[in-house]
Length: 154
Image (tube, rainbow, N blue to C red; front, side):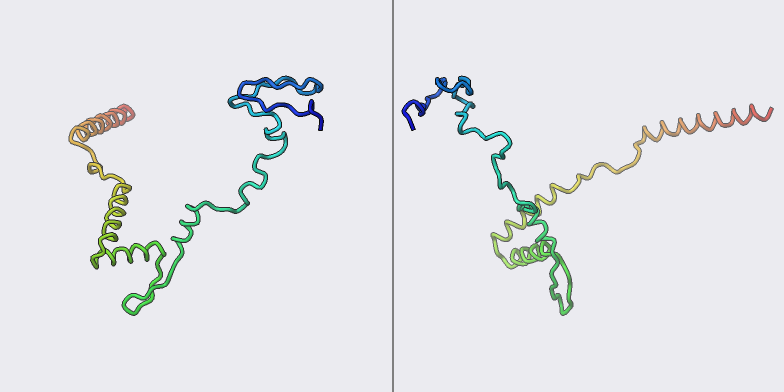
């Protein structure tokens, strides 16, 4: 390697040019402009191995594991429930027995579950004013039908 083949390391904002090589134009290295030799090559991925096919994120794995069913014995009978239900029952049992951290966690879970429930609004139905309006509309419709029937009879 000759001395003129090696280029000095540029500082920010320095323009690189190759005196003997006409293929590469001048290029300014700086913020968001790395040296050309360190950039990704065209047609080559920056993450060649990438995420393997079939790899699942933690939420998917957790959801699948918690939905698995287990068999428990309650009062001498076998019962099949999900692991999530079983874990919540165990947490509730600990909280009832006086385990304060379990009680705190259970109340936090209960509070967040209540927040996710749909809010109950007023009773579905019509108010007094709406009922009056609908009554008038029905009355007009009946009168219109009577008038039509009367005109067809002549």
